[in-house]
Image 1 (cartoon, rainbow, N blue to C red):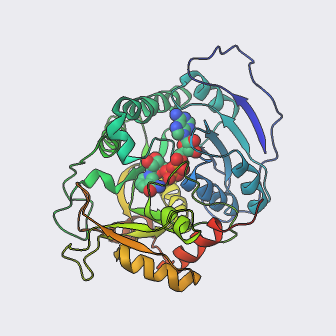
Image 2 (tube, helix red, strand yellow; image 1 turned 135 degrees about the vertical axis):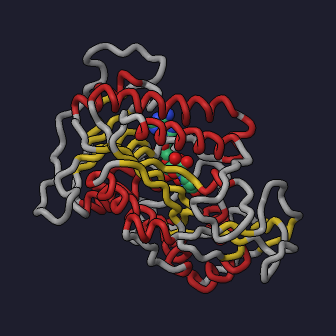
Length: 370
Ligand SMILES: NC(=O)c1ccc[n+]([C@@H]2O[C@H](COP(=O)([O-])OP(=O)(O)OC[C@H]3O[C@@H](n4cnc5c(N)ncnc54)[C@H](O)[C@@H]3O)[C@@H](O)[C@H]2O)c1
């Protein structure tokens, strides 16, 4: 995997600093679809969802360039993407807030579209460090959009979140539901959605797809890439996997008195490979049409925490001890998507089961040393 240059916000950036490699081999397969020869830049492409999307795009004949500052990713993922895909791709180590680095990236690798994953994403942390979230998510996205405009890239697929809905009044949640985020993270996503909508409306951006993810879990079936949280995982599935590995004594289940069949909270878990594939469908639409679409990406089916624990135990044969704790402030009883708009506009539907999610998450968690 060739890293082309490194650039950090606030560092000295000379004209040729950090150019450390040659152009890597790019993929030119036989024509299979509209995006076959398109070159796509993935900000945050070394992260959980970005790395899986990179693999899917490479398999489907796209040329891929990754840009990441590795603030929440291990560089080892680059070699593993290459192992899965058999393709070496260019990697730019840069911060999305560094507009000069972005402009240089676009000049070196002219692209047809951007998929913008890079962001801070921990809800709890966003309440403790709100300015960091405003800076990385909002300022970073402004700089990205400005660099795109400067070089004439006008198609973007954006990672948004079900967090924009806040506490849903009705489930399943449609895209028309009111957006009232209840934390800084969700608010930054809504602001970024608004910025992109305005740029499409005013013609600065030709085409955009805003993707509101529900609860991505699972891993690539090879077990080579997956979710790799730093420290104690904030999300349920990685924590559950770590309990199964005896890294924590038990899983804390927050609330068993919600108005749900077993009393625990219900969420819409979606396999990360389904999510990655949805990006390719969104990309196809973005490359082929103007305007903006905003769609939920979920399965449309909710599972409770206790159902997820039971599915995990059945799929892996591992026991997951748990303890019921009081409800957490801000948690809602149920949150799952109406996924029909994505089916209609993108011709995409999730196909993988809760068992697939558990099995693949566990394969990744219990992986042998690479
Ligand atoms: N995983 C989820 O549960 C979830 C749910 C809804 C939405 N999302 C959104 O999807 C996107 C991807 O999420 P993920 O789970 O893959 O997260 P992740 O943290 O694994 O990936 C994000 C990547 O962006 C990089 N990054 C962060 N700040 C950067 C910066 N300033 N410049 C360049 N790179 C930077 C990180 O190093 C990381 O590789 C995010 O925008 C996130 O908000 C995630």
